[in-house]
Structures are given as structure tokens and as C-alpha cells.
Length: 257
Image (tube, helix red, strand yellow):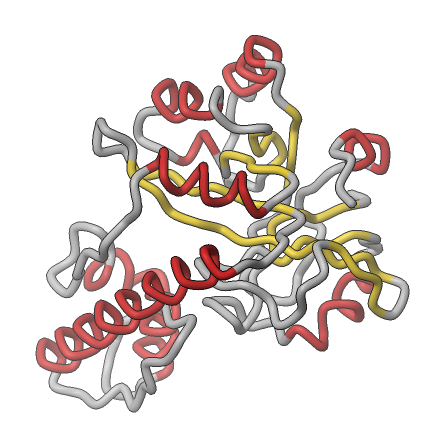
């Protein structure tokens, strides 16, 4: 098991893990360090890093940004030091997320002729819709089907949202975080273009559960070419931590507070 899982979501965005349950989930997975990286939302504490019940909790965030080419990537900020500019930016992103979330819910309900009984609030994301579709007795769609046939990027109920530009998002995180990393580079349609963006970051996510056999050589080459640090995490949206992450030595290289 890895020593540090640096990509974990909670109920503050689209995860199912409550903040209070993080230490127990970490101990169950034999993980000593957990970075909470909820989408476009800060944690309800100001410390960049803190200890809870013997587990180190890193205050992180995941921010989607768009490059000039149109490629959309996710940035992970670690060791967050909240401030008015960051809070205002995320407040505006959350407003747009709520509007987009309600539009998706409305589109699904109209198309399927059902009531999902969903409250669209701060932290809302498409996984909330997919779970509601899966749980509804009036549909034959499971969670994966919901994304594949309804709310995925090419689906009939998909609604886009406003995405900040890469340069703005990277600078915003750099001003308020100890470390900025490019998330899961091998998930993007243009891996080369994504890794080129990593050159403007501090790190890139090397260890990640892609669910298929992948060649990490391009990522390792980018780390060497651009002098990047390596991060890693499970991208957990449930309570199963430690699927991927860093060793104790790798984590210490990050020099987080």
C-alpha cells in the first residue's frame, strides 16, 4: 500500500466519503497521508496540512482548466493557503456548477420522464446525477450507463460549463498552494499536449489507477525533461483509499508544510 494518497474526493464535491471519516478510511488502507482534492472547493479548515487522529491531511483542490488549444486538463493544488482571491474564484465557479447541474438534471428528467428528487447545491457534479439515475426504479441505466448514454460529454443531456483558462488557473493555484501538479496525464486525448502544459507546473501525477495497462514512459520523460516532482493518488470517490499513491520517500520529496 502507498504511504500517501494525494487524490481523494469527499462529499464536499462528488465523493461519498465524509470528511470526518477520512482518518478511519486511511487507517483501513494503511495510508498515513491523505490529500483532499475536491473539485473547485476548499476544505472547511485553513491549515495547509494538519493531523487528524494520527493521519496527515493535506489541504488540496482539483481545478479544471482549458488551454489555448481547447484541451481541458485538471490541476491539483496542494498545501492550500486560502485567501480572498481564491475563495472568490471558487465561489464563481460553484455558481456556474450549480446552474449547469440544474440544467443537466432538468434535461435528464425531461428525457426519461422521471423525477430525480435531487437538490443541486454547492459541490454538485455529474456523479450526483449518475447515482440518482442508477438508484431510480424507473430507469434501466446504471451509473456507467448514465455517463455513457446520457450525461457524458457527447450525451444528449450533457451541458457544458464555464472553464477558466490554464494560465489563470495555474497562476491562481500557484499563488495559494505550495505545489501545483497536472492530474492523470494519460487520461487526456492528447497526452503530448497535456504533458507540455505540465512544464509550467511543479509536478505531474505519475501514479494513478487508469484501469488499464499504460506506458508511463512519456510521463517519466516529462518529469526528467522539465525537472518536475511526481505526485500520485487513487482519485477516490468512495472510501477505498490507497489504490495508488506515493511511497514515504516520494512523499518527502514534495516538501509540503
